[in-house]
Length: 349
Image 1 (tube, rainbow, N blue to C red):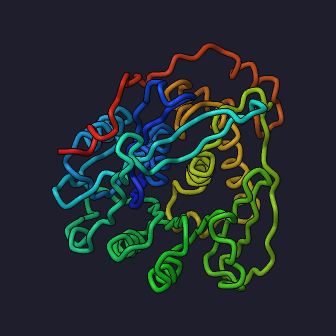
Image 2 (cartoon, helix red, strand yellow; image 1 turned 90 degrees about the vertical axis):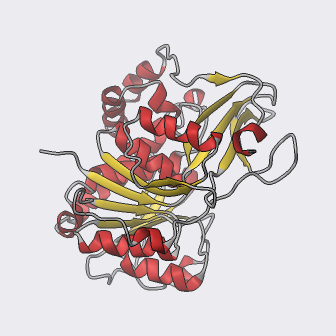
């Protein structure tokens, strides 16, 4: 049996991960919600194909080098002069009492100028994408643009499950069109706090609202008649092991997709509520484990996928002592430090 296939479009960026002081060495990896979710799925054995509009610069070379390390299919990633390779500085630090914190920075720390930002894939590019050689089981997107919605429609016509994870409402008309084509929507209550006002009735078969440390809420009904939100508590690991909560939401999406996305739309349409709850709990277990490593996908560079899945099962079975035994091991990250990196060298001509 071949690998399950996930197509994706949206934010694929180069993360510049800096730990501690501004003088600490930087680590470069592919990032952005779409980049994180698809690369994490590749780590778990999926065949993934992101669609992106990058610029031909050093940042895109570093980004693609990381994707290549995880066997990510790059055939739908363009590198042209009119594209853009988003760069995000991901700074990990501790607050005054020693709790781990992180922040994302979007300005060059040396020049003060804005770093390159996301550009959506053009609709004209989507027209030329053929799905005949690679049929997706699922399509993931985190930005509603004309081209991305057109690709979602193409994938749905081929039998793919559509997973939409918006970071904001964006342009209302495109957002509603994205909702109409989607089977699953997942969003943060911190980023979209008026969802119930805008959508008092269910819009997608599965709607997921994440609540940060409080877990998540969901409403599920194939006929879209559910009004009541139901809650699921998060899983937790010992605070001493927590290093960086960035990327926890992306890992939650990865866990959900890995549980329910293998059989496409037809498979999803046959799922009952207990399977949905298991998928959501799996996503939350993925999140709990991911925050024990620096960087949105830091766990991938330190723990192989078999040990990762074993630890996830132990978290879900509340066998935290076994999880902590794994986390207490000595890890050597496969990410290489970039000493004295000038951010401007990544995007300047």
